[in-house]
Image (cartoon, rainbow, N blue to C red):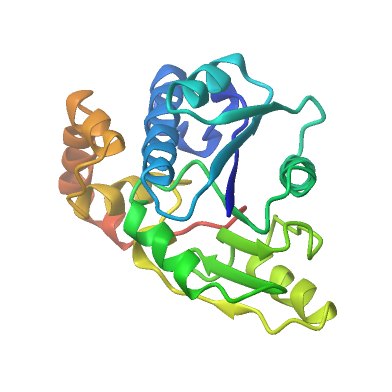
Length: 234
């Protein structure tokens, strides 16, 4: 099983966090989350190779630092990036791929191992949705190009449909630690409440962002009542 991690330019990451984070902070957070994901994948039994698809030299440097292979993608677009990675994996003889997004700060090797263990023999499709069961935070496909990739709005349902169109009964797997992808200020509060010890949380605390968010919540308790996900794009 190969892991495919598409990551766009750090400078373009997490625009929806602009109300609470400066551009440099958004970049630093995305770098921390990507590092958490990549190091967890590197420690996951059953992952033979990690393929990072990106056009950003900074992303490439980070990927290489953790032993990942980098595939440059200048075309842009999430689905094209994943398709490019899946095609490369298939050509190299991979039996399956695990598509993982780079903004899953609670990701762990045990969570990824759970996906691989539950994933059936080829042909097979396994989807780990986000907290709203809208996006596809993690997608396992055997063989790598068994379905058309349909990331975007309501991609969980779209990928299930794509599997059914190929005569495959997809598996939808709920894994709480892979359900949180950080898109909104409220997602940051959910992450901090989890008391996770990863690099993402360490950055939020050391930068003072965690304290500022806590103060804003204390001043405006209604902030805690916001929806935990304001829309899925995975």
